[in-house]
Amino acid sequence: MKLIIDFLSLIYPNVCQVCGKSLFRNEHIVCMKCKHHLPRARFTNDRDNPAAQVFWGRVPLKMVITGFLYNKGNAIQQLIHSFKYRGFKEIGIFLGAELGTEIAKNDLCEDITFIIPVPLHPKKEKKRGFNQSEIIAVGIAAKIGAKVNTSILYRKTSSGTQTRKSKYERWQNVESIFSIKDESLLKNKHILLVDDVITTGATIEACAQCLLQVEGVKLSVAAVAFTRM
Image (cartoon, rainbow, N blue to C red; front, side):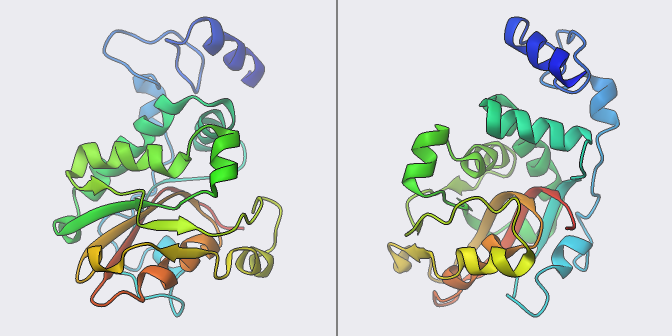
């Protein structure tokens, strides 16, 4: 089925990216039936949700919101794979907007100043052609009204893929690789840090430890999906 969907989406891009059926005029990226059955996390108003628990005792976060559950073979894995590795950026905007709708339901998001996507190393971003977290952040921004900032937080060194690494290896892989260009812009601000998927939380934790060094910063995290290793 996946090969058929990949083929169809190249020739007929106006098909559902989950089931491959043609979309109606009022549908976008995913048909209404598949959208209804997407595995939503429903963590919006639960400050002790499983994604938040990943960071307990590691970094102090104001809130952690994820939109969906990511499991091998499910629709969200399929959508994220098409987005990241086939370059279908509209999927990223769609997933970001869905996540932004959830974030907007949480009162804690009202004072967010900046949305900061987890940065890629410039070489990796050039190779891929885009930063997936930045595309997601644009979708979120359309729903909550905060500004996306891609210039403050940056990645100093390339860390390589995290996909096949253990929890400890993931942390070693990203430790101390992020830095901030202008701390004055972040002082006493509420920042929303955005990534695609929370697994071990190693990359987000490394970003958070960097951002939380700035005086008065409050930090929240949003990711399209959550999965456990």
